[in-house]
Image 1: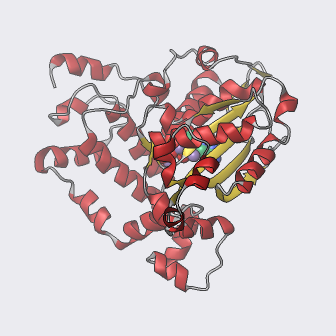
Image 2: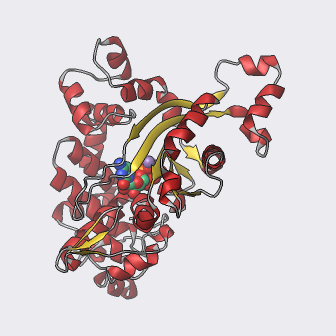
Length: 376
Ligand code: CTP
Ligand code: MN
Ligand code: MN
Ligand code: MN
């Protein structure tokens, strides 16, 4: 890098929430490699190592130039010896041997496969791996006890592996809004997650639901779910009730949430503005009878009371690493506890209300970052 870039590097702040991180950057080969090492460490239960790789990955994602030599990373925060070794190998040979060995290893491949099933986390995948499970057919053949979520995950595995496009996400939004509006016409629905950060594809579609009157939200999610179910759109759903008992300083998320799998009819593309059910009636029988004229999409619905909305929006927009860093910054620098319910000042012992995401950043003394710049 040039001298100019080097000067920039020394100014890179330590917390990801203090930096702009857009989706596109110039060191993807290296960050892909480090992300594999982070994932592999988490598969092995080494959370601290995984976090260290995640932090160095995130720093490289906000570099404004393509790395040319180790000199360029000399003064970067979170870029330790292990990380530097990986960078050096990739700069010199195009690949890093350690990363290649991880990618080829049976444990990494099996863990990656198993954790890609909806409802299967690292803990479960590890247990299964130790019991000898290597493939999806191993799971299907075995008389293993699966949760309803995992059974649905296996059933729709192929569909859920495919990326959700923005066009598909917008179709789902249209459907979700219709379901909610048939009970509360002025309900507020916002697409959060990766799509709000500007991603063109995602692994699911996330929505945040709110209304200025709290009573309007009572029972709304359940009714919308019944509406979707009655029209045949729901392939699976699981509701996590709102937990009222969370403490003010807890970072736990206690919002009412529905984790679901929605069926997206293939004909939606030709009939964007039509009511889907009307379209179905007009299809000729040969089209109706094709075995798979729909595809499964993962959808998360979150309900937040209006008073907590800004915090919920910030919390459900991500990225996951950005959120983790925002909480770490709040706690370590500001002595505050941040969650998607609110911000608690541990010294003044009070909650800090916020009417917008901008106000949350202001409480934390951070420059406001648009969702597009939160791709840490
Ligand atoms: N999230 C959360 N609590 C959960 C699950 C998710 O607060 N139980 C937050 C995550 O921290 C993230 C956001 O919701 O900020 C979206 O999560 P997710 O859909 O998993 O990831 P995306 O960033 O949307 O990426 P993708 O495109 O893969 O869906
Ligand atoms: Mn998402
Ligand atoms: Mn994800
Ligand atoms: Mn999600």
